[in-house]
Image 1 (tube, helix red, strand yellow):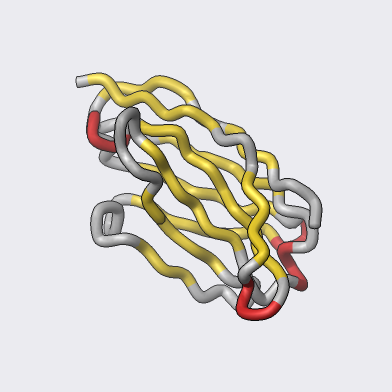
Image 2 (image 1 turned 30 degrees about the horizontal axis):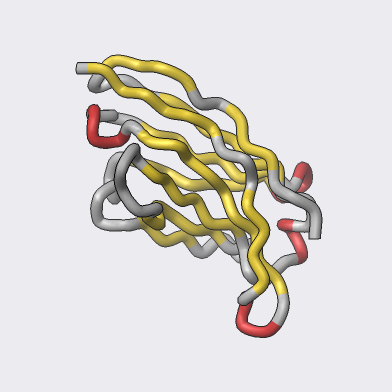
Length: 118
């Protein structure tokens, strides 16, 4: 399974928006979908959001209502639109694709840094 590639990170002021992209080869035909995670400095990695090729989406409580996950299946790309950003959203954001029985085999991208200043 090919490694996904993230892009779109950067620095933004609190209240601002950013859109992250994850190019995930095979997404359109992979029932495991794509997941976004983030890891802030000194903290454990946390799940943020998921999307399946069927269109089903899931969000963590910490981002629900502020982040929107979407996909372009023609280009095997998943987007994470982040709005109303706060300094607590500062983290390395990574996408993950999975395969195999119960989607247990995961492949991580290298991540993209998001920094939100107050």
